[in-house]
Image (cartoon, rainbow, N blue to C red; front, side, top):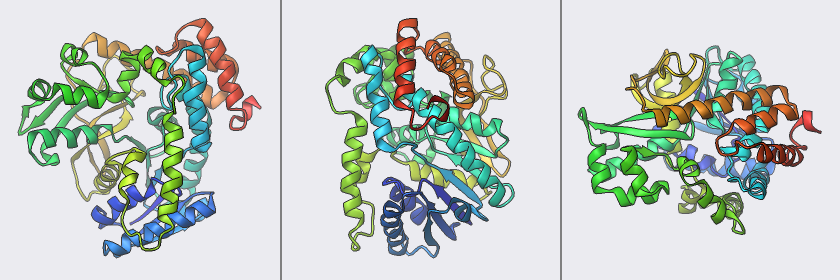
Length: 418
């Protein structure tokens, strides 16, 4: 099997490579694709050393030529960051001037990322469709995953969105329970970066109530949400819900401090220096601070299932709703636990959601529809409307000011705004 990784020059790529080296026996060739040749050569050479050190028989190649790289691929992983870390830093800072949270996947910052990312990913996907093997899957790890996956599916691509939030919870819950992670099945539901763990089944028994009772403080710290919120909900929201449940706290803490993007940029510089060391043959511990824990395991497992190598395994993915959540349209893209096989992911049944969860999901879904429309067709009025619809903005004065700031910040990336 040939797997192409678009955005393969990322300093995080060795995490993915490590997963394929340890778990991806089906891989004959892993090709890393990136326009930044100097960076790609450093990451590519390190990736090849990881494969060799693990004794993996497959080869690692790298190229700046997208068309050549995806030719005859069985699957393609898209992990782009249009604009690099500098664009991320901008996303994290300009909303703060209006008293709104600055974050790269939600709020005004998330919209900015969607606007510059969707057109690029659609172009990449079109080229994959023309040159990869017929029926090749596109696995999208590019944020905002829900919006990007919706764009891919609407354009007729064979795509599925992937996030590492659920597998992180699975691993932590398994650790608390003293069981193998594969024994834990999550009732994971929502939209990308707007999800809740509503149950954690082991041998058919929901162990989440006991986890909340016995590990409330630890879980609260992990998701940065007050224990009282968790006990009231009776479930475990993802960390990204802390931007909704504690918005003003995040704004206060972010003002005048280093952004996450600035810290990641520092880590990336150190990692690149480390990757240049020809004696380094395994991913360094510092990579764990880069983010995206367990991404490699999630990606390897999902690709294996989609190719019939681990049929009917459960993965948390972004797929069409198709009636799973009855309060959303069939063509909406949701994030749920699903069994995946050759026919693609099939969502597990979801018990009815309470109104606080379904209401917030519907609200953010409405924003995402408008965000995708703005990304595809441009126009300040569409940007403003999407901001006005977002629950973390939602006021005319904020949306009006943020629309101008967003467009000014994104002129180099947004053809319609230049």
